[in-house]
Image 1 (cartoon, rainbow, N blue to C red):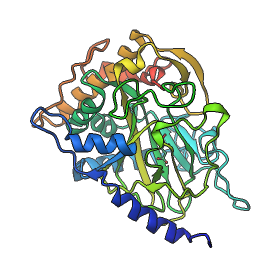
Image 2: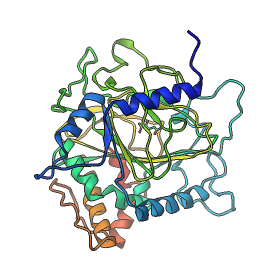
Image 3: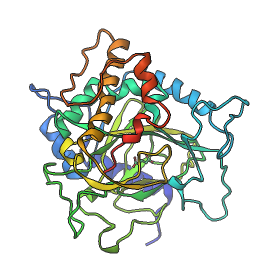
Amino acid sequence: MAEASWEEYCATGRARAIALGNRGPMKFDASGRLHRDIIDAYNANGFYVFTGVLDQQEIDELTREFDELLDNAPVARGATIDKHGRDVEFPGYYSLALDEVFRNHQVDGESENEAVVGLVSHPLMMMDSALRVYAHPQIMKMVASINGDDFVPFHESIFHKGAGEGPPTPWHQDGRTHWDETGRALEGSDGSGKTHGFNLSVSWSECTPENCLWVVPGSHKKWLLANDGTFPKSNQRLDDAVPMTLNPGDCGMVSRSSLHGSYPNKSDTRRITMVLGFHKRDSAIGAETTNVHAFRLPGKQRQVKYDTEWVETRARMIALAIDARRQYYPDEEPYEYSGTYLGDGNWNAQSRAEISQEGDEYWQRDITL
Ligand SMILES: O=C(O)CCC(=O)C(=O)O
């Protein structure tokens, strides 16, 4: 059979995605937990799309602050000035299209602009709007429903797939820790047991089949790298993958055990999604694994064993974000975090300086599982 055109592939993918029944607004029951049908659909598919989570004010503030970061991006790899000749405020935090994280994606014969920004790491210390959305009360309640009330952080970064020039994300599963020796997930089919947490893609752009993240439903149960296995090649069109389309203000929750990736963005619409995430506390404390996130940029790794101090030091960011949001939205009921953390939870000039203290930045304790 002739291979489907890109347009047909996108259209059939979109139809299959809609048929999965794993999208809709966040709905909570009387006890404040996510509706059971949402949790079941997430556990069955390995991802769920929450529609209409952010309001227009929040979308606009995220857009403005991120565009300022982009405008101040380095002109080339390793550069410390931007295209206006100004100092880059956060040098070393931008991944450009040809960096490690997007490696192996070049299509034969295509030249690529090295200066295209593909990813900005650790935005909580750069954008107050990102810090505030991290503590959005609906998101926090949703997280507690999945990971328990004492949930702990994972890592944050912003994917930027520029119109017509966004690099693809190679197919991969992020979870690397809680599998058995045959590659079966330790996570139960109801989400019980040790898990790898989730990536929540918070969108302030139109995420279409042409530019968005694609996910293979149900792929979170089996580790493809077990027994010397491999991931599909970057850009390979997978028949069973579906596009995770999002509107501005939607949030897509993807199990970190799911196979996911994105194609080069050849469309005329840019895609911007901030990935943030959380873990179950008991999946993190005591876990021995390879950490790939506690670095200024992706591409490095080291062996770690997370102790209580590591995890509870990082968990302070949840409390700080809640306080930052409470100050900005005094009329909103703030989320009450009941997990333990080290340090105070007061957002002020001192804590702002502490989270970006050179050598002890908050992200130095990001938690890869
Ligand atoms: O949004 C994307 O293109 C990639 C997201 C991703 O791979 C991740 O968060 O692990």
